[in-house]
Image 1 (cartoon, rainbow, N blue to C red):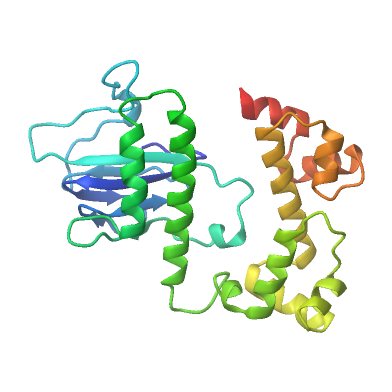
Image 2 (image 1 turned 45 degrees about the vertical axis):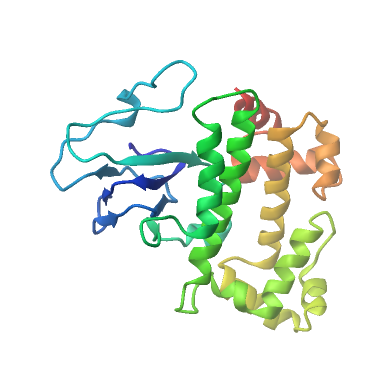
Length: 272
């Protein structure tokens, strides 16, 4: 898999192999394991070190209505469910993730929460029936959300951005912003709502999330704007109101500073 701007994941449905990524120790994958490459690094999955590999783009689908591809030699059969996903305007938690995340299966089966999503995906993918793409997208969203949650819950070092989730007051502030991103939040109000002084709140928020509180508010608003632009046909003024901006101009300026492009151009590219 070449490097790309899309993160990758692989679920081992049968067999096993080795996941290799330059600069990292090889990771053994067994049946039932899930591997995620959050930063979209180039990587290789093969049966054993030194085995020749094929670029995934060179593998042809079984037919015009199938998402299945076959390749390899005459060795033991391995079956992978592979996918890609975009972490739009990702939270610092995501930026802090390791280059490879492995979530182990149990007794040759995926974890229980993963098995349910895998069954749904396997039921939709071979047929490519009407609506299958939408179902696959939604189920994949659930699969990845569960995977990241499982990974974060099993971190034991207690430091870095993950700690924001376990700090009751900062977690409460983050929740307030997500529940009402259109509100004209200030550092003073957020600090007051979680019973901290302004300075103590700012220092702790920055320490745990890696950015100042108001930058985080901006991140949430613009992530919401990007979602509305990708998935709907609302006028820019309506998008601005829905994201806490008083006018199209203020949204456009903030959007361009953050994404490097105008909202209109972003929408067209997202749908091309």
